[in-house]
Length: 615
Image (cartoon, rainbow, N blue to C red; front, side, top):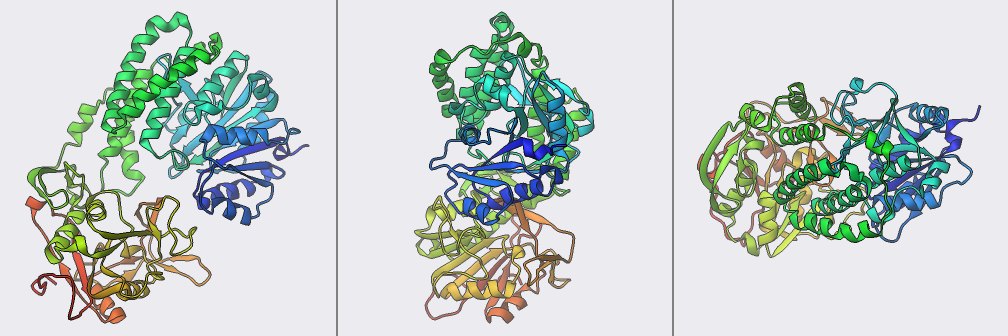
């Protein structure tokens, strides 16, 4: 019997993040049913070493196509379609931010070939972290012009049978090549991203073919990790492409009810776009859709209209409740459990509204004060008693540890604007944003193993540096700043020595790191890097946020107050621990200690004596 892999060409569009792509490809090649599979990886002008690393992995059956210019998801898929193996009867599309489960290919191919009226099948796409939660079970579409993920955030067992659905999702799908050719090709290239799979769904219906959901085939998905993380770009394409499909695909006989619903949806989306500061791209998308509408052929069909969703408003309301719960989720459980808790709450009660969620999760604290970050009078608000991550400034959205380190910098080094300053792993808000805007000689660094040390990232926004092996010259900086970074370093002695080496005489390393053991317990490692490059976990793995990696950073150390002795032994430098507790400055919470390691000299940036600081 012919193996399913020999019948399929699989297209995987790629934009950066080689590690994620290689994980996806490894999960495919490890599946025995994928032997003989023709995999086309289309690099959409990543601008880094992603295609080189994929080619160097030398995986069986993987072909690489490099695009010179970034054209979006649809154009990358179209490039793969043009370069497919014409002797294979099935074409597939898979996102690079997925990991497939064994048997997914065979299950989908069997269902596709057994149903002559079926042009396309989709597997169950589940949450990467929580496989019992659906990300999508195909595509749904409402007559108002809103396309959305079918079954999004539902339990997987709620949609556990093979059934006809409106259409496929570009995240994971398989289709018959002759059907796609009859429909005019894979995705319409000028749509670039968003609603390209919905447009294909309408063409499939017009040609008389259906789409089936195959629940036994499963793919784990990191949502929106591979393409389009820019809200303004997303707002434009969603607005333009959804407008195009509404006026070309919704039957005229339904306009009497669809247009009022469309107006309501547009109002809701405009409010959302305004809150995200994307209103101009949203309006521009609506306007620029009309030339496309005038030159596009009709996609209207009775079979598509038959499968339109009738309860889109309740689905949209649930979606908004889930989004609201995500914004105010509790911090007493680790991700993803804190998000799943709130999603379950939103779905468990159909009558639950945003107002009721707001009442249940009403602010734990509200107060007035002056923010050290934006240097203005403001209001501080926390949704629960974990102030460290939740006591927000209403204006700049900074959190207490950011305000604590900025207050310390202002007090100890008021001339920081004229200093040469290096910040490791800065965020996009709070003290990082203020330092980047105000310092005349500011250098930011992140660590990406895919980029050579000392080089700048493709966007020229940060330099690639390993704190343990920095490429900076000796005595390069007056100040080195790091916020919750040192607990993610494996060799802390090397990191502190390197930071001391790059400091000018009289300079200082000012940093925060959770001193979770306090004064009562010693610092202990949580994970170790072995000689072969593997990691030995000494405690259950714990991850914190990373500005350049959605997977986060592994916690490698649990510090106590004896960190000052560790730094002294490694560098010979003295370290002070500054304790701040001032609700009028929004500085209150757990683990807000700011550590200041100074390099002594006769000449140094002007600063007051900190010998009176709490130790």
